Image: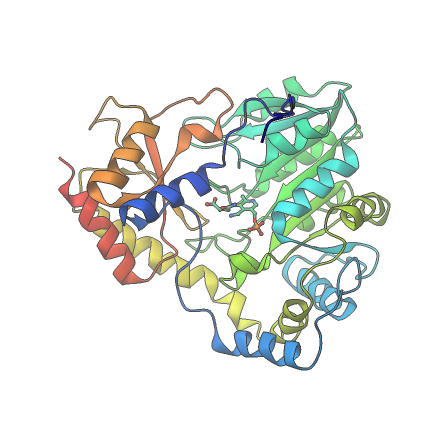
Length: 384
Ligand code: PMP
Ligand code: GLN
C-alpha cells in the first residue's frame, strides 16, 4: 500500500487486552493456560444437543432484537426466585453478547461527555475503555489491603458530575465479595442523588463458604437505580457462546436497548432457544457454588507444595498468589517468565490498575479439570 492513513487513535494508551496476550503467549510456549478466565470442564452434552436441535429445526435467522421473549421470561423467574425482585421480561431485561456488551451498551446509554464514573480498582479491564469511548471520565478508588471497598473514599469522590458507580461482586480479579453492609452503605450514599449503579454480577453463582450472593436486586432502593449484568458463559461453562444479559428499570432499559440495537442488533438465535429450554434444570446453576469451591480447595491444596502465598478467595473462579517474597521483577515480567520457562500462564494484577500498581500478585483461573490444575502447579513447584 502506498498510502498510510494518519489515523488518530481514540485509545492511544490501550493495547491488546491482557487475556488475549497471555493466552497467545501460553499457546506459543505450550504452557498450561490458567490466565484467561474460561473453564475447560465438560459442557453438558444435553445443552449442546439443544443448540444442535434448534439449529436443525431452522432457528437460524435473526432473533428478536432485544432477545427471545421465552428466554427473558425464564430469566425474570430466576431473578425473582434468587433475589426476590420482579423484573418485567419484555421491558426490563435485555439479552446481550456476553456481559461485555451489556457493560458497553449500558455505558453508551448513560454516559454523557464530561460525566464522571466511579471505578473501584483493581477493575475488570473493559470498564475504563467503555467509559472513555463514551466521553466519560473514570474516577478511581482502590480496594483496601484486605480487599474491601473504601466507602469513605467513594463518598468523597461523588460529585455533581457523578453519573455512575461501577461495582463488581464476586470480584474479578481479587475474588472478594460485597456483603450486606456494603450494599446498605452504598444504598444510603446514593439515596438523594441521580447516580446509576452498574453492578457486574457475572459470578453470581460462584460464592464460597456458605455466603450468599449479595445482588443489588435484593435491595429495592438500589435496584431502582441499577443496571445489573449476568453471563450464561460463566453459569453454563460456555464463555465462547457470548450469551449474557442485563436488567434495569424500564426507563433506563429503554435507553440501553436503543444502543444495543445498533451495537449488535440481536444475539445468536439457536443458543437463545437452547438456553431457554435448559434453564428448567435449576440444579445446574445451584450446584456451581460447591463445584467451584471444590476446585478452589483442590487448587489451594496443590499450591501448598509451592513457595507462592495464596490470598483469600471468597468467590469467582480466580485465585490470587503473591510472589512478593520470591522476586523483585514486575508482575508482568514474572508472569511472562512463568509462562515461558515454567509453562504456566497467569494474569498479572497490575493490568487492572490505571497506574499499573504492582503488588507482585498473579491471578490463576481454577475453573479447570483436576489434571489441568495438577499440570499447571507442576510448573509452580519448580519455582525456587
Ligand atoms: N465482568 C467480569 C468481572 C468478568 O470477569 C467477565 C468475563 N470473565 C465479564 C464481565 C464479561 O463476561 P462475558 O464473557 O459474558 O462477556
Ligand atoms: N473475563 C475473563 C477473565 O477475566 C476473560 C474474558 C475475556 O477474555 N475477554 O479472564
